[in-house]
Image (cartoon, rainbow, N blue to C red):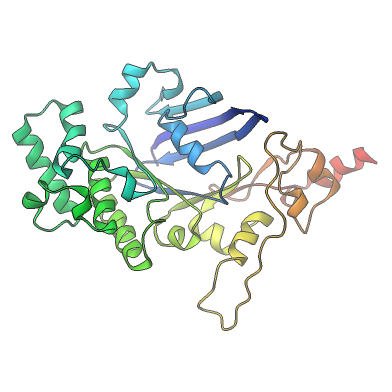
Length: 332
């Protein structure tokens, strides 16, 4: 499949009064044309920082993209100047932020807000921009779009506002759509509608989606591939089936065991003990060692190599690497 976006060894840190927080520590992944890649993990693992880095939205200072490459159609976004980036943001790569209640400007009609992107990037007349906005509202399921364009955000429900935010992100027909926790603020019924909307839009437009979430229920419904993040690193990457039915990293296994199961009577939830590590001074080895029931001495000292279990399934874990025993013998 064609790779539309490649993230290579991305490193992002933040300077604070307490020191430097290494939020993203060498993240790499590819996004293929027309697929949905979900990035999952606990709060603070670096999911949103990774997505915002792709758009170059990390405030500097205190944030800093310390290294790596982000290739969009072969062009490194980290090396572009701001005027060039502005041409790509919204037009080629768009982002849906977490809370639809605060993502819209309360003083402008939704028509003005949806048309802003296409007027900026495509230099259309207002008549043509309005027509495009009406078509986009139809696509995202807003009834009576011609009348709704004249209304303000407070006149819409939370689910409708999220649909409007999606329309804003799609108005320029981007190649990549980044959705950062797009259903977190919505109730379960509306959440299901929004996820179904993502599937329909992808089928109609062919847009590639990066979905940021901590909700494995959301991931199971829409993702083609899943990247599991922990403490600033992707520890396992694979297809939806591989991650859900053949998880290899103990952290991935722990995440799945902590999700309610409706297909098993009296299924017991097993929480992951302990807390994520301090990213002011990340451990030299695997960051999950202190919480891992299978940890070996080598885990604490050396970060594991990436092991390929199939063409698309990769895991950073010494349990899957036959070199672990040999390396452990050097500590004796």
